[in-house]
Image (cartoon, rainbow, N blue to C red):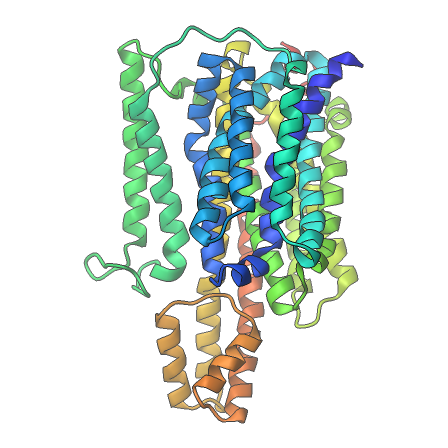
Length: 528
């Protein structure tokens, strides 16, 4: 089975790229404790990681075209391994952000577009469909192993060992990287630096605005560094990012009109299956990463579980995602991608509604586990199809560029998922808590005023024990402290439910974008 050796290396790389994100999500509480920070700070680090990848993924694909895809893949692994080493030794939050969010993120921008193109170049026809199914399945395996392995290591040893282990795995892959067949690099052209600057700055501002909305406020200023016309800067920052992205499109058209190589050929977006596939990848990762940020908070902060116990509760979603993603080639023989993706979206909606019913003060492990298993089934159905749809929508000379767009969509969705769902969580928490204490006759006006001042200074998703301790420091009487803590506990659950409901609404909103997905089986087309 010599021809599958390349898939061993490429699949391991895909597994690695997913592994540490899931480790970070399940280790949120320990990271907050180790770096003496808040949940929102860890949220920012997670968002920055995916934002770096979203901003520079297309650039990484272009560099792969210019220098050779296997060479770009190799260099990316070296950079990624260096970032993992820095992360494993990080003494402070900013070093963690540098090693994980920036250095690892930049390494991934070289690895992932090259990976997508190398899979397409190494396999043809039905073998390519099998290869993409395996890649999707290994992404599911990374999500499966990450919470469990990361939870166990974080609880009983230290999360740093996971990143040290990644360095060892990178070295092993570098030793066998020549198993991957390469294709000659394209003639070198000048990198579109203007396109890089405009696209990365535009994406960064959009995600920054969404991320900071939880502390700045959307319209009414909450705790922003400045205001504009009396309003929070959130929407202004997002709008500035939108303007830069519009200028990016204008710049790219100008580059093509002058006969220069653009960063992105905008004509690719005129290919309906590619456009739909990218949109669905963005939606899939927005929902997945949003929920994978919120659910560990529910398990750790509300239920008081440690990282390993959290990983066990997340195992059903990971296992079913792995299994359903691996069925891609089989599903491709009996159903069109459009049908499979629509089924996956429907399953996701069912899972979200079921999950809403499980968010209670005391968790029902069986019901929660079944809801998570259904969630993984829906995610796996999407993962089994979308990578092959994107790559099968373009010709051989566009594989790397399509790979860059593919992973840009995925990581932009991940960034927005963590930022948007996290922002909605905090916003809903503030609203629900304010409503609870206003309607509670056991809470005095003085306590309401003190709570209002605390919320104006910034809100984080903390445990009821921390709220009780804060009330004690404010010298509130025991009866009033109990009422305040009960109100906060109710607000926590309301906020979590609002976040899951938002994920369900996004899933429903994705249905119209499936219209342009292929309505016929891709087995033959994937081989062209």
